[in-house]
Image (cartoon, rainbow, N blue to C red; front, side, top):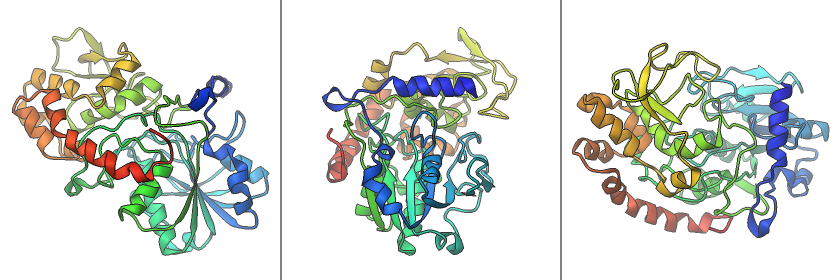
Length: 386
């Protein structure tokens, strides 16, 4: 616990410089913009462990100490404390520190709260650190809650946070035939929006119902800022480097490959037991982020991407070279892919082009129109300069 606090403190003290050379200030710090709205109201939060207010306090702790009537916490994937493995059920609970009830939105059947839960509060406050990808589920939980709030005439206040992948847009727009729990709205793999911006766009484009939503903006941030997260957003994205690689390496979740779950470097390495000609190898073992990782206890041979510098990753964007490399070397044809691949990449033609031998750049050229179209479409919803 002391080590975790020290790491968090160091990360917070190492200020991220944004516009005009000033420190980026996240939305929750602008209490003057939202605290008066919460007084004498029953407040619920959609939040998780990333909703840090300062070195010592979570946003929930701060609101509780300020006398705000926090009546409940809604928890997304990974749970309120961010310790639940990806895809696993999150149980209802009670926050040990404040005694506030926690209601899971990721328990296998509850995609939105019951009418009773919705009637228990007046205002929903949203504060979660997203990573700006279509298949990262925090924004999906938010949009489902906005739908519910629209139905129950509840106000929503989003305390915005920077997008660490907010400096670019890349990937094909989701074909809604592949809508799923890892792809909710027709946006590219990397949409370049903050949580506040994607909420406004989803309502404006009719992808979700229109509720009364206000966004408390970040200060000194724009879409050219490279924002370093002060805390890992989920168990298997432990480093900033893994967050930058995630748009590309998460696609391995839709294949027979290991993407490093059960190691110290998830989404920064990839491999398979049958790629024995590779120099690099690793052996997945159960850990806090993955209790039963793919190829548990088997030696996998593959590639280590930890040596790639951040600037190269930013320039490449969504890079299919890793998937194509593994597909060609493993030599098992279509058995390389799982149905999850289309849910992640968002369209059916990427798999087909890989099988037909197209290069990563040729495939990327095909989705260039999607990127251009989406950037025009999203322009009126941007809260921060590009």
